[in-house]
Amino acid sequence: MLKLQEFVDYIFTSIPPIYLIIGSTVIFIVMTTFVYTMRAKASNKPIQVKKIILPPLFMSTGMLMFLFTEFQVPWAQVVEASLVGLVFSIFLIKTTKFERKEDGIYLKKSKAFLVILFSLLILRMIGKIVLSNTIDVGELGGMFFILAFSMILPWRIGMLVKYKQLEKSSK
Image (cartoon, rainbow, N blue to C red):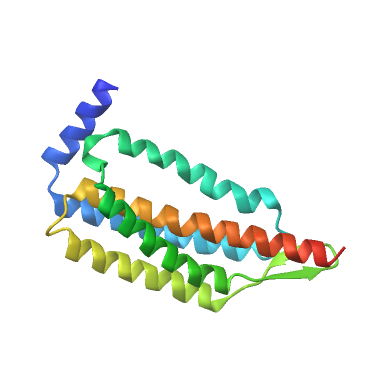
């Protein structure tokens, strides 16, 4: 663990913050594209409960980042990031819809989902640019992780509730 902490310290002291911000933004753009592609493909197959539940579980492993001091966030910022994530999740919950077909329950395609994803991308980029002047890059990364997790977890719970309601009503 000490070697890993030294490596993280080295990255944050030797790479200029602007490059870390640009790199994390590029990764976010790639992930956004990946999520949209996966969602488009998922709408062609019946959805299953495990496909709803697993993404937040996999993402929760990212909480390990908070073991490193560079990523630790004060409680006030944890609350702020969580509340922003919860607000964003409302849009995702509202635009996620399912439909019953003869061979299962499907996720409906939504143009609003793409608009929301790109809006979040733009808001994230603006937020990083504005906040990087006053908040350390590692701490900012921790805040954006908290924001993303607090957006995805309620969204997936909302999806599960909608899925179960449709499943129950179709029996």
